[in-house]
Image 1 (tube, rainbow, N blue to C red):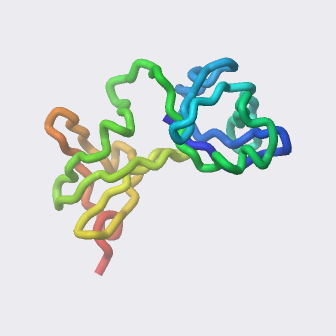
Image 2 (cartoon, helix red, strand yellow):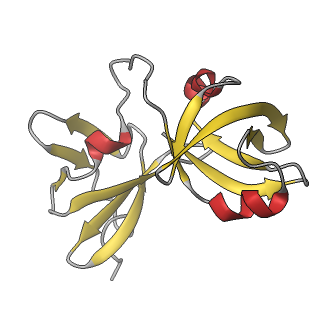
Amino acid sequence: MARLGRPHGLEGFLGLYVDPDDLSLFEVGAVVTVSGRPLTVRALRPGKHGPQIAFTEITDRAGAETIRHGSVMVDRARPLGPEDYWAADLVGLEVRPGGGWVTGVVTGAAQDRLVVERSGVTFDVPFVAALVTKVDLAGGYVVIEEIEGLIAPSG
């Protein structure tokens, strides 16, 4: 759902990397899971590079360091639009043409990226319509535009 960044300040705040559409899931009092540990949202504030979050159970910078870069999961989800996908649904999809598999999704500020593994080599592919031209969850595959240097090393 989201990822924690580095600590900010001395009161346990951390950067929160989350889709802006999902920010409402992190209201004060919400219980989330960070690396298997339930935590209660104490505060959410805007930061220079995006939202920052603090938890009731973590009140200082040292505590925040212990969960830095942790994955944040919530027990509910917003409805998805027709061109939206959950990261967990994309992992494991076959890459067509050319083969390979989606092994992860990296959430970014400008766009998300699919992590693709092909023949033991890993590549990040921006998850934009011009490059990922089809997602077929039922069929178990994605179609990625074959641009030299994007998927396969240029030679």
